[in-house]
Image (tube, rainbow, N blue to C red):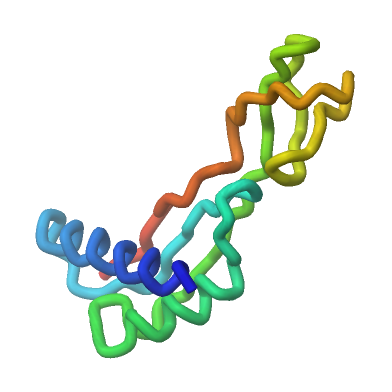
Length: 113
């Protein structure tokens, strides 16, 4: 389950920012998770609760902002929605797609004290 390692990294980032911006508690975390990122939102929620226990983000609300997949099709030259990697272009059926959105995992916002 790579979500555990991802959540450990999120906590490291939050702790580093707490020192830099002098806050002592995190009340809520908003995280963008792309549809093409191979990250399971429910697993992230579970893992975040586990790794934040006893720390600066203990009991913080963990909110997921879903980012839809999108790609540019080299065959038809259009930007198209993409549900999962390996799918064909919904416009022309081509497979030469360059992902342009939805492969992200990032902290979007923190609510802190």
